[in-house]
Image (tube, rainbow, N blue to C red):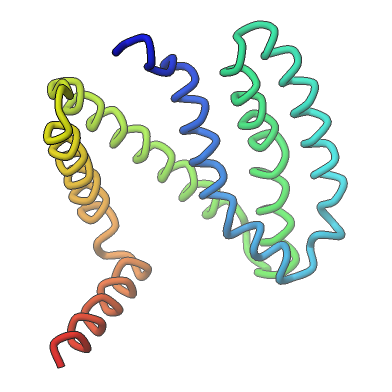
Length: 173
């Protein structure tokens, strides 16, 4: 029933936090692999302090959603801009602007896909397990089709397709 639904603000806050965790994961891996941890320790401290202060303020203002949003805000104002800048400057010897543009493009695409999926999903009320499964399949297919259409020609996608093809050939043999 509706009494068990999470508030929309909380779902959005958790989704944004999850998205940022996934997007920042490669940076964290590079940070650990390259030893940038020593140069980013103060940024982490600032992010933690900012997160605590914002969590208290926003938690009092809008509840648990505010606490979760505070984590996203502290990541955006610290890790998201500082670590890529440092990594690209010191290890890739390249400008970070291309990375930021790709990050922004991916965020816009993800928001657009979320909006499309929402518009489709609200048309299918879930009353049974079968409807839940059907809705999940439809949402998954829509997401897959959109992302494959957009990223099909990228090097990363082609690499994945080659690995899947090799795996399928291995299974047939």
